[in-house]
Amino acid sequence: MKWIFEPRLLFLSFIFVVSCAPSRAEVAPFQETATPLPASTATTTPPPTYTVTVSPIPPSSTPILCNPYAEEFCTTDGNFILQKPIHPPANDNVDLSYRYGTTVKRTRDPHQGVEFLNKFGTPVHAAGDGEVVFAGMDEEAIFSPWKIFYGNLVVIRHANDVYTLYAHLSKIDAQTGQQVEAGEKIGEVGQTGVAIGSHLHFEVRRGGDVFKYSSTQNPELWLIPKKGTGVLSATIVTGRSTKLEREVVITGPGDVAYYVTTYAKGFEYASEDLVVGDLPAGEYRIAFVEAGAFYERLVEVRAGKLTEVVFVTGQ
Image 1 (cartoon, one colour):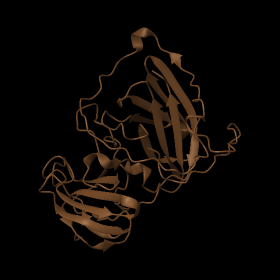
Image 2 (cartoon, helix red, strand yellow):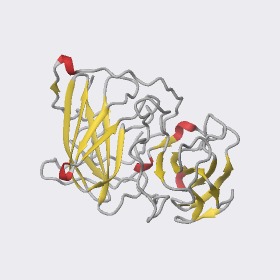
Image 3 (cartoon, helix red, strand yellow):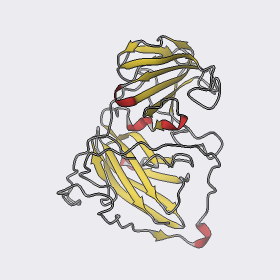
């Protein structure tokens, strides 16, 4: 799947100027520099057992001016059209312990959204203009495979078949069929459904079937980055047909390290393997181990932009 955003060509001194839009079939993959690890340090992580049936969304027909499969990285405008559903002074940071597509080392179900940890009664706001298509308790297994999974839930349909879900609410301030505007209060943070502790569970779904549990996309690809920050997306291409959770270390300005886990099995429909939002603009080093070899890449994150990087390991 390719995102539908309109990318721009990144001009950096160490990157070629791309004069046309090459397809992935026409361009040789970027050659990685992999350093083999001693045999004693290479480990194999068993894949999670969770499976899900998915239908991929057709890729955009928009020409790609910068191909992340051929360049060290690409910088684009992204598709940042949604506001944060939590407003300051409340906590509007995505919880880093249970990111989208991860399982917390296989101790929890693969995460279809992101969390905003806040106290009971914290206002929840519509992330964009749209129509409320559901507002109430999910007493039937409509939006997930389980009854009363999300608890008090609001679902908003936006333009271009984009949907946002706001779950575990303690109070609902919207009605089905209501037109809402971005920033409008639609509920309050709670702990209904299967929530552990008060928080907002926030999802983005795209496609004609909002009821499909596997139609989610990483919300950090849609949420507008904070001022002075950007978003980093990484893909690790291997010879496997399934996703595999692995540890990735991203080091940024001031030697601040972000320890991120790639998506679990069941997210094969996603074109990326990890996304980190609200990264301060600057240079970052991405490092991980794959099949006993060490990979790393230097990339640049720009404010208000999406940086895409693809590793082709062939392993």
